[in-house]
Length: 524
Image (cartoon, rainbow, N blue to C red; front, side, top):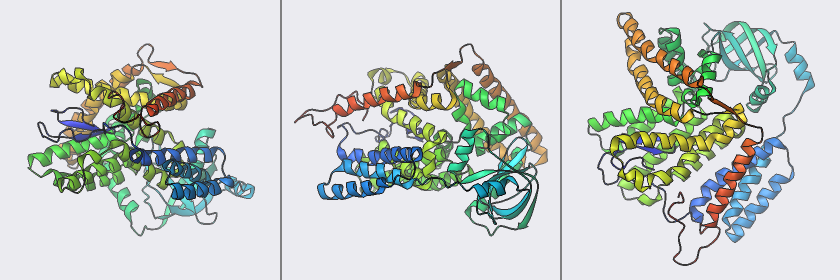
């Protein structure tokens, strides 16, 4: 999906993919114009059905009949070659895969009395404003706790540690359920932490070492610049105050703090520009950038939104390489398939993510872009605009499509909508691009004391006005629009009605007859 046939970048499912001006294949990322045949609907249908099945499974876990039903539909599909049968198979497999949480009263009693424990660090530590958080798997009880230790503590995945402190119950209930889905039974407030044995290495260990090295450089910055750049570069939002994070939510730009396709796109665009200056062939640019994106996913903490963007960029890169060698047809590239593949990968790795706001917001925003953006990209008005105003209109339309996609989930998560979200995104997305690259280019200067003070002043001079602008946008009259509890349900019902109307025009559910095609205004 291309934002400008003669522009410098394209938007592929929320990920800015650079394209060359005047290149005959500039508009290679397009949706098929021949409707939505069954073959194209196969993968999106499986991903959506699995997601719905997991959601239903968490609402009613341990359904004994779900697995039998799934196997029945699988056999029916194999016999009749009926594609909707695969969707129903995925739906009931999702229901069957969720097991009820086992409640052990004796375990709760033991945890409540816990004052000292030993265990293994199993994830990437994250700094907060006052402490360092990490997950530890206890040796004697076989459960996981989210531990909060002193902020100056250094622990790494794989290390065996001993904690001294007290057990705590997560509050409110929503956070307790959030942690329980990840297999975390509670909190442990550690006043003292001792490392009993070092880690044996591994991917998570070296990722944590790299994050710690970058974080130590950022800690040489003034407080506000340190907190903001830690969020934008590493995804560590814990250093921002609760007031600053609330300001981002009220301004409608909280997604800027969550590493996602936007941040991957900013990095890819810069790398693409540099490799093009060095005259690398297009296939080699993808060959070099795909591993770089994978490394960034690790450095960013293996977040759902980052993994989605990385999978989709990898799909584009591999497809383009195969197309240049004549192994696939250009028309086969479909962003809907990339989004569906990314969703399947995330759900298979982290089934619990289907109920998390990060998964819902990331994939619904991208789905909004892929389904709604073609209304604009194919319009005569856009084609008639000069390049400079078209860039800003493209940015605004992409933001609007993403906002429409996430509306029900924003409403259900926060209970309000940001009235000036579109305006805030138009102002702050370009500013975020400058900030990210200023932070990356400024890191080497922070290594040396002679240049660190100067670099810190420059970065603080960019970060502080940015935070001021977020605060002012969030404080505008009417910036927060409260919505009722039923808003998300009614919105999703309206969306479902639109999808049914769209399906009525597509030949995969309701054949239109010989020679008839869906109206060209329909996305896809």
